[in-house]
Length: 148
Image (cartoon, rainbow, N blue to C red; front, side, top):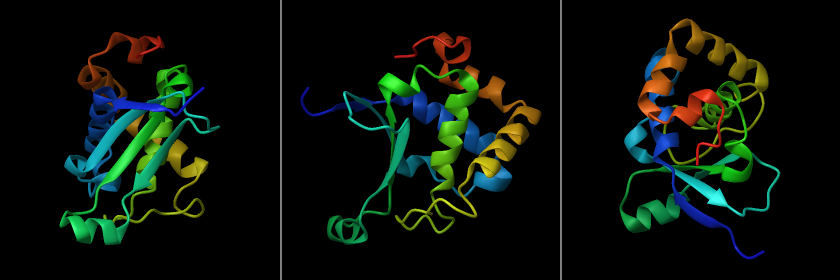
């Protein structure tokens, strides 16, 4: 098995945008125009998804604003049901600090399973799951298929 392959994941970006919109009071600071979404194929990791910040010096050298890359590990992420996929994405979004500086929040007080569960409940109460299904526009996202 060689290096992982990466491809754009517009379904994930649409889901993230719907999550941000539904949880605007908590995640409204996230500029979805500066979040890129990719799926990895063949990645050797235990993770379901990862978030990557771009190093500050690189951003300065390139003259660009901070961006974040959310990677979903396709062999694992797309096997999850809708609820777990959404929780994984909420978890990754919580790593982005309010300052949107390019850095990442660590696991702990702000990024933890209790907070993810709380935000997921609020998302459900606001009808956000239905919005995600509409925006992603891929039946397998909402029926538990493979989604690839």
